[in-house]
Image (tube, rainbow, N blue to C red; front, top):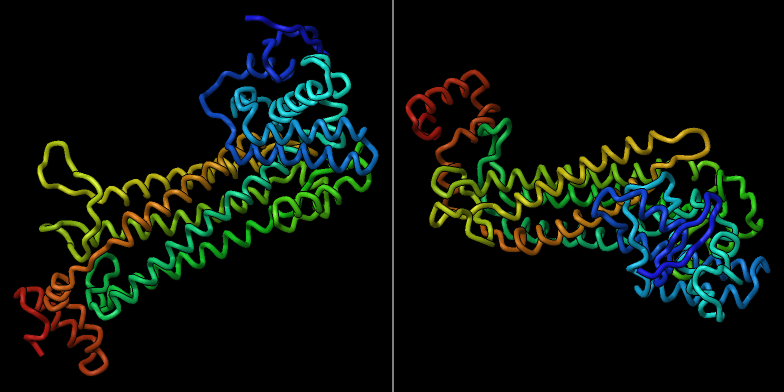
Length: 437
């Protein structure tokens, strides 16, 4: 393989001739071969967008030569369109603070910008990855800002998927509003309710979970870009942070603002933990609802058999005619993964010392993975399960008539002790409660 020789603070590095990455990228590729996991597309988009914005802002502030800045922006556009995906290929498990990610992009854009200006890859003249592409920035403010942009972007379709699920539950609540059934507590007969009551409660719980998540999402709108290494803003123009937030707001169509305390944004990962916690709470509700539906659909002969789930695939390779609650089983696994990732994010948020939390690469991947699987899981849940649920009204009616669920309603007239006596007789004789009134 043809290579070019690049020098950095540690010495010489052989870099593949065709690569737009440089010495830092090559060292990261050699040092960190841990997994097959790579950065999420939204994270890549966020990094490219930040670098493009920084070049534009620095030119406006006369911190960068206009020609160099325009070349960096053109290179960033190509990066965002996917031209350099093969060169943005670092393992998510890497050096702390995401410095390899940041430098990978810096080197790609510098090399491409130099080509556009008539120079060759690896020369870093007139555009240097540190001095120009990374002007007014540090990995310590770029990476947390990129996580904010990426998560904020990915959360919007998730919230829409959640709203669609909530609406599906509400439609079923109206459809089932007159279908009476046995309400259960402790998995024992309690009092009569309707199937619509249950589905209406599911809709309400999703609504509240989404509200908690949207509130947490707004914490992501405070950006730490411009804080540079520790939050002091050293080596960044005094107006850089404000102008970056304004420009990113215009480009992303949201309202980003500079964080009130840029020192905080380099070492506190609490906003990401808050979003992750809200995602975990949403997963908790979905897990609970899924388990209810699995029980309602259990049978068909030896279970509750109150609802019929859409049949999406055969349930067994050995038992003919068996149909499993496959969508609900998949959703349960998604929820467990989301809750597990939340624990990893909270542990990561506890780490770091003094002015820096260096666990951002792990936080970035885990948070975006939570969002992806939960978003797709809710779409699946809505389209392949909830929309197609059919109530088994006859089975629910029979179960209600044979249950002791009416007992509580009799207490005001007959008294607790008398009704308890009637319930025991009904159980002992396996007869309906109404036979003893």
